[in-house]
Image: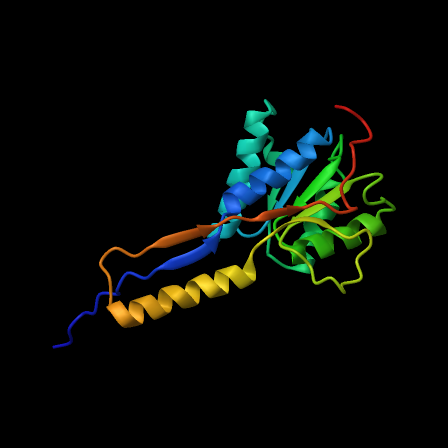
Length: 194
């Protein structure tokens, strides 16, 4: 007879996706944007859920009603970003800003905006969760919420070494690292106040 094994609880080190998305949405709100589309990853992925939650909380705090038509779920890919951006820019009124759930979505969205003859940020602001490498040739360079990847790796390594020296633990730790808002040229004041 086979014995069932029960997985041991494990520590988790991750970025504050809710807080980072809230900060990025507040940045757009402070620029006068009131119709901000959220281009998200899949509904069943925790980071996508967290980023939509942060976006939603910032909108609610600002008194902006929830609009299901401008929150779209797709894949965390360039193709997903392209498809989602094509969809939201056909809406009337179209969003004045797009919040991409990650940098791949942002790249695809940027391409769709350019193909539609829309300028970033003059016509539509575009922001993203996740940063791009400094040598990436996307102009204007994206306003982002950057995750602290190096610090995340260091923290995870420290936790692993701690567990190796102390042994397994019944109550794992969840370590939530802050994110950093990096304002660049892809976000600007909304052209029309709604």
